[in-house]
Length: 117
Image (cartoon, rainbow, N blue to C red; front, side, top):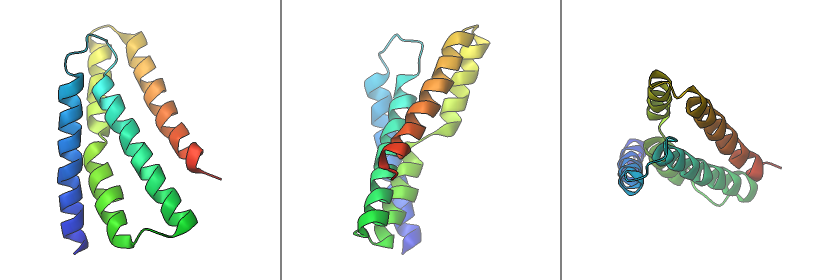
């Protein structure tokens, strides 16, 4: 059953990721906002689920598989983050690449600190 939940969640997360890419596809900024937004949203969902699960123990393991592994796994995208950062560097936009790395890593890590005690 957990395999099916991960499969369904991964599909849902990928669909949300695709919709976010469409919504941000028209921006002219050098920073890849669609990937950043997807990763931040994934971290917010992940952090919320972990907090509620650990602190309140309200979420069954099945939902953890569906949401944390499936949805968050399909929604977040390290490979796209890495590729877009590489493309920025290749285009000579090293400062933007470094900003992308810093903002993505710092914001996503800070989200988990928000949920930590």
